[in-house]
Image 1 (cartoon, rainbow, N blue to C red):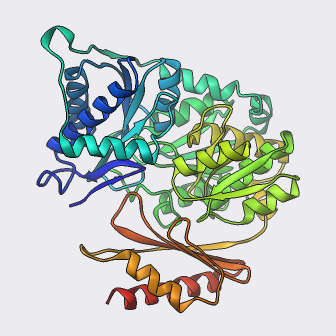
Image 2: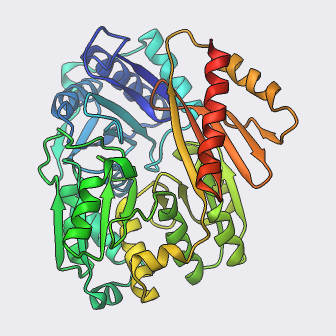
Image 3: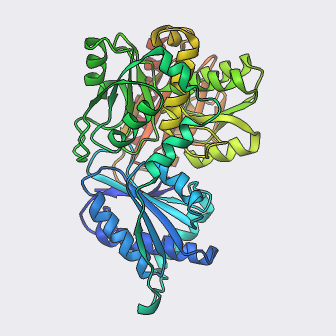
Length: 460
């Protein structure tokens, strides 16, 4: 059981004792804190909500709706939706904020409240601290019977989102249609099954096969779009002679591709490829978090732009993008942020821009991947027992590698000539993540293994 409060929202496993998992009492408590915090910021009484396809989604939604209307807040419910769709709807509805009910890439026993401000962006760390203080004090004041909020359902935003993507200036529908792509989609039994196929059709892709297209939240495989979880997609792309495969996570803000031979394009290279295309049309700067591949920096410099790394977390990437006027950014987990559409990771605009790039390149997806510099990232994690002092662990690692360049902006990043390793606690799980990158796959794995052994020794 786990309940995690971070810049990624209020996330936990469903059930258990209040405060130890995401129980109904916790859902009500943190929704009430959010509604109370919003009421302190603005007189606007409208909040947009939407959910992914999780088993617990309907139950959590009912608790959220009742709590918000009990505070006198009007709720607009998009129903089964995506994280980027809710983000767009907040601004299009002129709402005070939004709540997305999704635990993103986490397994089906998890759910979360992802909290948005009036710009449709994740609330800041400072705002989150105020909200948590309200929750701790249970400083709520519910509305009397004559001032209860209203509840309405709005199912128009799937089409509105697709229309925005298709009409985005750098999306070339004619070029995509001319290539006559055959695509296999892994929708992992969530809302990607509702959004991705209609988008592909609007982009002129006629041959679309969907794997795990029933939206039942019973995720047919681990929902994180990593190579080891996409074997069915890989096999089907190869077997059906498709041009490419597309995988999204349950809330459709992460994106990765499979090449025509069933090999992985690489989730790190989703952003690299899209940035290459955007920068070829529009000069400017880029941002990714410091756990992402340095291939983005290489591509940015090639196009005459400036690359900036940020701390991990979408809110940190967005902050850095605004500070550096970035024209494209995101995270190496396949998260694409196109700022003049909206400041949020969005797999739908990512798909459209990637297919435009692939169509213009006249290449196969495998050949496109081979045109980029090769870096290998070894992604690992160590689960933490209760009571582990991560700060002490990191301090021991710092001392051991004191002769190497280090960055402590977000966890601990250590450089070894052209290689690096980044270790940090997760915003979404009780773990330490260990990412190591090198131009040699074995070297990246060995660096990660060495650091993981150091961490285990430091813990013990």
